[in-house]
Image (cartoon, rainbow, N blue to C red; front, side, top):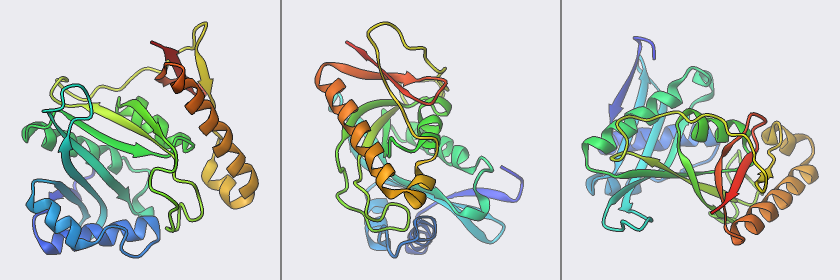
Length: 240
């Protein structure tokens, strides 16, 4: 980040209102997360942050406290519900800085892992989360949130993959290399730009959802798990 930008932890109702305001701008919706929910969560140990460019809030993140979904159920997990950057500041690396700030905070506060979900059709998000940040896919969920009505996802089925980011078991966040498929692997493609396709050809976009969902659910029901992303931005799943 430039010298003008700074990340500030959220503590107060005013901070919570700013997080809610940024989310509404990013997702083109009214009250995606209410300030009251953010305040209550912060009071109970959750993470919230606001990124400032001078006097202008340009990004925010919010994560809630939970237990691990792995075998080590007593471990604390931080679930990152949302993190977003306003359009005027997109593409400047702010998202990476926010996630690194969140990782460091989680480590300092005793969290073993961080989880979050993303739309597996969105190629750039898959690359960011899996390759750049080094998070691993653990599950695929059909229509995770139900039907959404924000400016990005309105009318779409909210299928999501859940990723887990190691905190305590890692000395620092490590990017992952792209993988090469091997004999017996399942390869699941992503569209070049699903967000543009949803605007230009909604039927084709929905076909992508149907095909990808079927591929994920069939592979995972047969014991496959996501090993990584290949150089063509496709998911590579291996058995065992």
